[in-house]
Image (cartoon, rainbow, N blue to C red):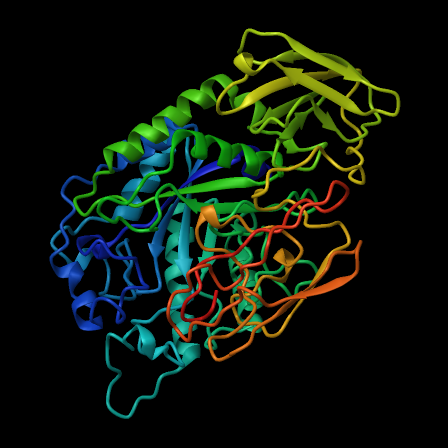
Length: 523
């Protein structure tokens, strides 16, 4: 795992014949694009501008240490020359093994090659029970032959064996584990199968059901995968946020690209939370990449040339992340990444190690700082001397970092809309009137940043007329909120399914945001 932990920053690529439509990969099959039309896209897809060397070089130039290609999404189409299916890249006019070319290019440019593979397959007739919402199987079984999930698993293992033995991926990134066709037992079996193929292979937590940790063998997976949100501060288990540089995973015309500030701050928040960032692009139908996305990635690379030593091979901490930013550390150094300054000085909780010196990184200006009795640290920089994206302050310790800072003292007041991962209250609990398959209970006492897109917080179904959520703040007692919580019966909600008023308290309570994306499924 060490190379993965040290890398901190990787490229995610969602691409396939679906790019011809500009719709979302997998999810648009049978819902937007008729399944038969979707399944035939590969017959006309000819990405003549695809250049594996250019993709790998862009990854390296962006400061990314690894690349994860979606080799097979939920639609079942595979981007390599597979011996066990004809529904692959070789069956269309392009006729080149994209996985093989990209794996070789990554090795040339010093980028670790990784692959994504969906255990879900809406095309394969043996995958069962099929989710008919997405069009049903794309092929028919012979007369008298019934779908058989064991046959599908054999097929899947044969494909994964091809990927692992031919291309030595550093990570196998699974997805699609939530449907009834998959089970925890199958996940454990697949995890062990892959471990026998390659003991050094890193496998994410979506190989089993529930996206939980591999601890006693019953819950497979080596790292957590928060999606379209920044993970919470977590040092006891590796994690990696996967997030899009635009909005859609696959290419979409005129899809707005995140600002450079948002891109860099997302990376910093992940690293200071002790996690990685897997940043996604969706190449265009011809295999080229949107110029603005290239520009953004190269600008991130320039920033990493100057500041990468505060990101690579660091740990998050010793302070927990917050709206102000976060910290990374290695040896006897700590780098404070101040993204949002409070009014006045930034005062950090008690820290029981002596800070010898503090200095501004890569900027002129005066830093005023002090470490008070009891370890409380105060820092301030004049407004004109602060970096508009990330003011980095380097702290030199008297010895290597040994302990984390006190998490019990309150930080200065947070902004009203605090960022994902900040605590509502250190003792808060939340009860909901119902739940659904998308729910992530770890987020129940955390904030949701709806600016980051879809959130992993779902608490009621679209059949519920009067959903409620009960918040125990751990300080004032319980209060039930229902105003603003609406049920759309499939239509989008104006304010989102979860529309609680923000709560601010100068002590432990920081803020309670609002989750969006209400719609069918009531996310």
